[in-house]
Length: 190
Image (tube, rainbow, N blue to C red):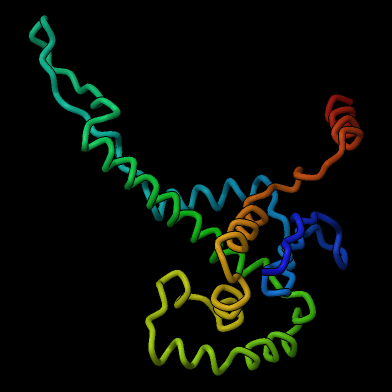
């Protein structure tokens, strides 16, 4: 397996990006999201995939008053609830990934329309096999063909996916040095 380099945040053709080297040898160019973009996407993901409330039980206090009390951490309903929360987190993560693949990600060397078409053609036979013998998961079937190629063939393993997810959710302050932060603080405080 090819050795993965760490994520590289930099200016690339005038854009603030994170470069992600994949185990397949391709390099993704992902526009770095701002904190505001992350916040907006988080809110939408929470709307699309709401978290259920923690399970409770009704108890009668010594005063005779009813009260809802959270169940203990070991209760089977709480364990199932945590599993639900993990699944919801996964769905929210896939929402971020869909957004990034469709809106902010390109493959180095295949950025323009001609390059995207070339990349799609390179994987056309493999895509045909998958469509003939398999069923695409919903998070992939909704993608453009270019984004599908990235998701299905270029992001080859869990380490690739983790690196891409980290890049997708890393705000633009990720590589800001201390002097830049001091200068911004001086600017805001006058």
